[in-house]
Length: 149
Image (cartoon, rainbow, N blue to C red):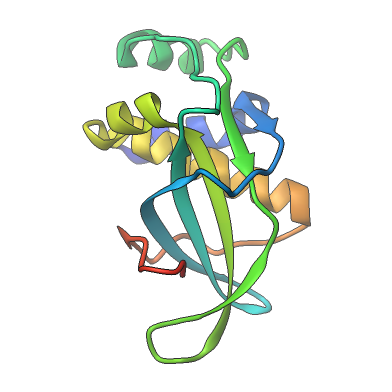
């Protein structure tokens, strides 16, 4: 994704978030984004659940056009979980957040760099807004380790 498109998405994504009730039970692990804040290392676990409603079924071109035209009609329902303490691979304490999207949409997102970047951006901004965080850009994406971050 080019930088201009990323910046355009970044400015418009807060209105694209539709927060569902946090219900970690029933979420299936997906992938993990490693980042940090002033308080230390942060992991964002992108999970999925069939109980979360899917977003509208738009093509990437239709979604891109909406973003370029600054239309706020597209929403991605997601569950933004509470912060929880975890240990990283080195045994150091860190904070993890579980963010869940619809399972069918998650499968679609796995085949699209555009949708994956969009969900990551919306999740980061949603967590920043909900919890008053200032997250640094993500350092990497990988599978969610067994047991969480």
